[in-house]
Image (cartoon, rainbow, N blue to C red):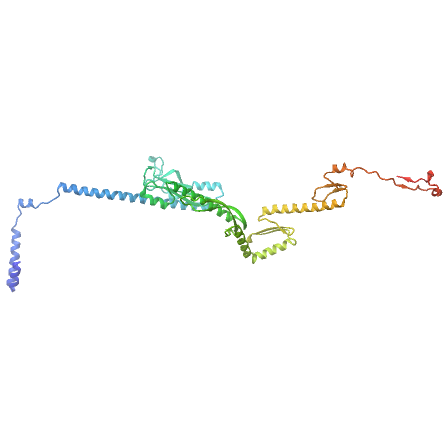
Length: 428
């Protein structure tokens, strides 16, 4: 750096000249330098074979760590894709179920065989696979041909400790509910199995699956009963009690009970007596306004004493009266039975009263009232048939005393000579 110092000490043109000469000297030196073969060879550099082996080995180790993780994440993504596919298929099946008449066996059977578009869009049948459906995500295939709305099951046919859990859903058509089930074979996909629902593979899981299915069936039947039941009670019905949990609760199940219903809902109450009291309170609150007017109108139509039917569906009222008495019944069938029983009871009472009066009168002969059983009486003895009466003393002809009359045109002296032949009375 001496030249820079000298440059600073000098001033003016001398500085400029010194700087120019310095640069010219450098440039001349560079132009006159020519590399020799020996110097060129000494400047060459590169990698040795050992270095290359170390680098390749390092890359191999990194690849062995990264590729399995990538494959695992890809497989888990395929499981999530399969779950999404089945959810879409289940949703479409439920939509189709709402369009049919469930009471028609033909339509219901057709729905069970229906394959949703979410699945048919993936059907790829090839000659090499003998018609096997091969377009499901990952290694998934349909199990046992379950690929219609009634039941769908997909699994990895390789089995073993496959990362792909078995996924399935079953739709109960009458209840219109989806029941999901899965089974896991590898801990790496346990979360995917559990989020699908009812992840099996153990005694506990199998029990919980069955318990939840029984609960759904029982609850559906109970809800259907309540929705179709008339107001009143107590109605005997099976109701789910307890909860599905492990260990098993022995009280959990579809157990018999009694309920009261009002406007297609269950009346609250701790026991039957409290429910009955609450039911009566609800009836009193509802029977106001238009309902009371309709009941009054119908009661007037029946006259006094009431004899007939009051049927007001809007007010959930169905009553039948027989000669002023309300029969204990709740629908047309039971009321008809109660009506026949009441009329028969009245007929028996009328016949018994008439028979009692006839007995007290002591009149011999036949007792016959409309609708009553015939009886016969002989000297206050009751006989049950005409032949019994005919063979009795009352049925035989009786001897009567002769009736005597004075002779017609009797002579005038007969009053003094009644023993004379022409004066004797004529007896018949």
